[in-house]
Length: 411
Image (tube, rainbow, N blue to C red):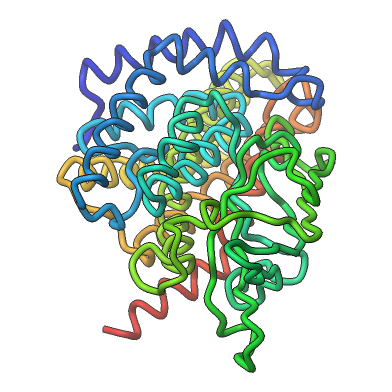
């Protein structure tokens, strides 16, 4: 794939009109935390039939699970698409990120991570109980793995525990930096099995549970104040002796193997990292468009600043970054269309480059705008703040490097 098809461009233009009519007028309210993004996301789903498409996919996946098909090959129901439909699911991500990357983060965690984990790892009953409502955004989801003392060592450093209690479990722990945490109705929660053995906590099995808002002992914090991505609510979760039945344990088994807590977490890392490239592309495109327009119209010494070679160099580098990230996205679409998935190392490489490119382009746009770039009304200020987190969440740059290098050295 080397360019968008006519059909894809038509979809892009339709989504662009939606963004301009529904998102742009609400940017201030979203940016200042006065308006959670969820009603806008639901309207997007209803407008473009994405909710019905989700229902159709859900039915297919449920039937496959009942028939005993292997679904532990990475979720394709989330933001990175499903085979030939990958392009159609990535286009809204790209277009939303022209103005509001936080909306994509809130949407992607609900659909891609929370719903994706349940659809891959859950029993048919659990899929019906929680999966469909998340896939259609009727309920908001959170994916809770990061803890205050674990960060990049998410699995090894995890301290949240699940202790067997009769036919169920008692959960304790604290999760932080949880997207949708303050508003989530359904939470996919990772915890270490506390079986009373002498096994070091780092080596204990990781179990995955589904929690629901209002459970006794579950507290959801208010939204954090952040540097950027203000339209994506982020918070903490506190669990104190939260009791759940075995039906809340995904797959209703503690057995290791495909679909276990550790494996499902790693599969979701691939989903997150591949999807971030599409987010980066939308942000880069917007920074470049704003910069080109400014370079044409801003005059110094009676000449547009675009006549200056230093400004031209900045624009040229932005365009190179746009082309490179777009090609990564196109490659991902082609792989999905062929029924193939990225390896963790490939997804890490894709995320590493795209995140760095987005941050560099956004900061270069601020520099090109000069003093105006530091002012909120010119929008590159917001995009620069939003881009910075691309190098932190879904695994820091440093973590991406380790995954790529380990793969190279293992060959």
